[in-house]
Length: 272
Image (cartoon, rainbow, N blue to C red; front, side, top):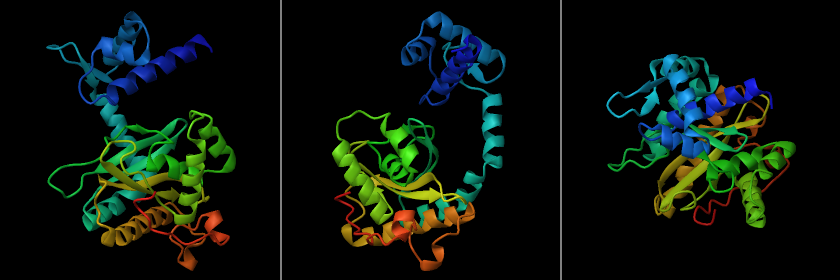
């Protein structure tokens, strides 16, 4: 790799490590996360601080994101059609079902959480924006894999350990058939995510919308309605992004497999 390109990649890794940390973070922690020497990390931190992308707390010598980074994020959100297409739909879904709502988009090694809305319960349950969810241990990740193109799906699989492939394949088929998938207690113990795919105008799966809550909730009698609301929200975002194919038939997802006569959802939340 060209040295200049490597330097840029390290700088981005350092910036992401600070941005996605739960609180201020020090040089040693960043170095440990990136498995690099503290001296090299410190140089990148100083450069990013000098440019305004990071800020160092003088009392603790620890770092957090700076004004310029926040400004870029704000401008990007305003220009990002995905956010614009999703914001109102997320709010309506949260207000309807009462659960936390999570919007995610695909990356090469997992699904990145772009935005979250806290539920209406007194105790907040959710996933932090910026979190990278694994393909094989999250409802969002497996839904993305299920509706990705064949070549892209195989590329995602190559990032995963070889164990558990048979169970993963069954879940991918289930997601394609149902149009949604749940992951009770898998990524975070005691928490359940139920995710549905979002498609763009070219019928590519570009993200997911999910509800997040305690996995004993919702009660079985409410599960069918809640999943229908989730799929309707995913459809509305997809339409906002320009997708039209298949909606005239009233399909909840209208994936290529679904359009060729796949089975209707079985709505078995606990078994997904």
